[in-house]
Length: 225
Image (cartoon, rainbow, N blue to C red; front, top):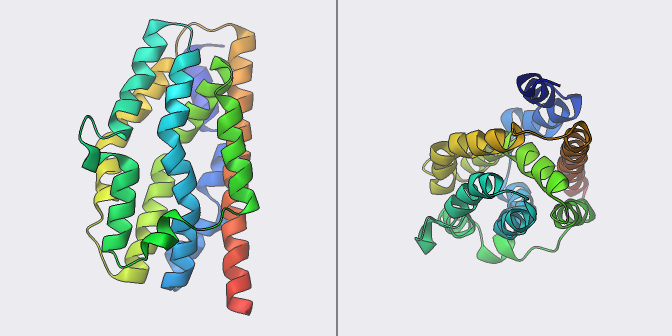
């Protein structure tokens, strides 16, 4: 398959579109949210955001060429703050949410739900092979801003705080993350490798779909309690 056609097919994949159009985001946009609900989102999202640098490092270790390693290592460098610990994304996330009035324990120490556990297991498994690692990297980067914007909207709705440094750094850096991931999957792979990259991106999107379905179910249970 032509490389541009390959990327277009990934972008239009129904499973990716299912995540982007998940009812969770409509709920965030159109329903009133309280701090308890948003804290659930924050506490579960902490797990993938805090693990992402380790996932990227493991991915870099299994990538077969220097060109691939260079592309993905730039994403890792930015995730870890470009040498400035306070700009590391997981630290910015914690500090941004605490500054917005959420308890630190709710942000970084909430019990992991089963849907979150499945998502994290997927990320851990994927770094065993370069094809699965690339599928998870690219699949993540082309849904990431949807997740970030949804989380930012939820935090603003519940707290009234509009300046959110963790969101701001994604607006600044995410376009380059997408370019680097896009460059990586445009390289010369065999048909079997490309099929494996797609299959793993699809697995990741299913796991994220389950993650957001789980959050909606938790919110529904909270309202019923």
